[in-house]
Image (cartoon, rainbow, N blue to C red; front, side, top):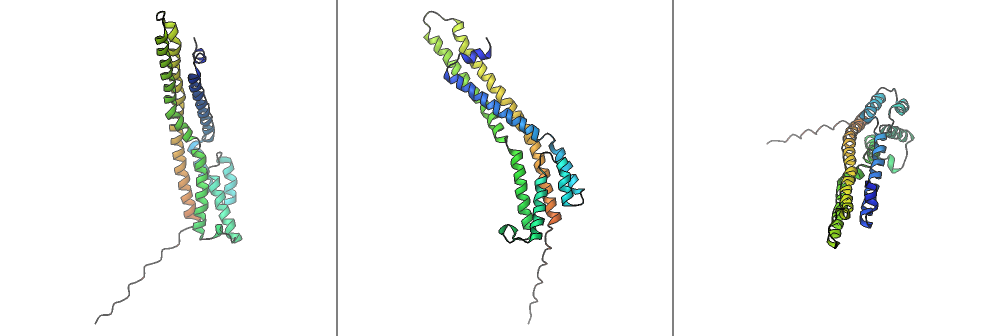
Length: 234
């Protein structure tokens, strides 16, 4: 008897648990495949993109060169934000977004660009963590319900105990446990692997944003402290 036969013999509760585990598995694998495609270059593409930027003679050339290196479009948003701030400065816009010093406007633009890239990197991580944490318990629910059905079947027997009458519910309970683990293990592994890669990329992007701010909007020199006034003595 296959696992599919055991599940089809179950009642509404066991089928609902199996359907929920199936939906969790499909959702987690969709996220795993999408994030694997997004992070296919890992930190290598980010480092190559940053190096290509600093080797470019200007912002326009850097934005064009990044198209061949930054496949996941994680570095280019910061460069485009830098270009937009430069254009707004030349155009002397009068709206609120153009107010403040160059350092303030560039900080705001780089922060928005960095947050957008980080949202893309973090997308799906919550789902993987949720599936990895809850799938074993959902499978355990199916296991408990299957054992309950087996005990109820034994209690309802009047003509003697036979193993074939309880083999179905017990087998269904074991399948639910295995199904829950099979859903949770890939989600947990993917969450840990992707979290490690995302952490490295975040550190590189934050460092790149700080370098851009320090290069294109250096801080104003500190005002020297005022000399103390001489105190007249008698």
